[in-house]
Amino acid sequence: MTLIGICGGTCSGKSTIAYKIENYFSDIGVVKISSDSYYKDRSFLNFKERSKINYDHPNSIDFKLLINNLRKLKRKYKITEPIYSYKSHKRLKKNKVVFSKKIIIVEGLHILCNKKLIDLLDYSIYLDLEEKLRLKRRYTRDVEFRGRSKQEVKVRYFTMCKPMHKKFINPSKKHADIVLKTNDISLNNILNIILDKTKC
Image (cartoon, rainbow, N blue to C red; front, side, top):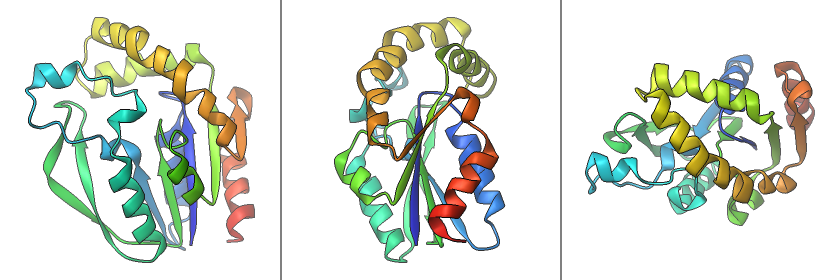
């Protein structure tokens, strides 16, 4: 059982890479966990209030639940994972049952911001993609898939995302086992790293 963490700034390719890893190793068994699913439950607030929350701050994550679930997976138990809606900024009432597999991938913005989670990882990768490209991707993602306006994306990025990246996310790369710069971020590079670490 190998737990691999994939971290990086917003729109650095974490989810895309994790999805491709899941497909590549499907024969031996991979489970993919996103830390976004573990945003704290704020359903008691109305939508306007939830929209003002700084989701780029590490305090937005329910690390206790995330870590407990990862520990269960490493012990080969199944877990119940929350399902989070980006459009409504809240957890849905339904949950997802996740079964343990040989490789566990946990990806997310904040996974190297918590010491207990860092200690739980067998190997961690930080995707250090240049800001200009990340911002371009964020505009595309949030407008097309999350129902945001361009102005809303701009305001949130420069008032919340960028300051939190500078204060928390970028410094957290010092905890990664390897940092991949823009030109080194490729599926083949990452697959080779995982193959080496897991001996699959």
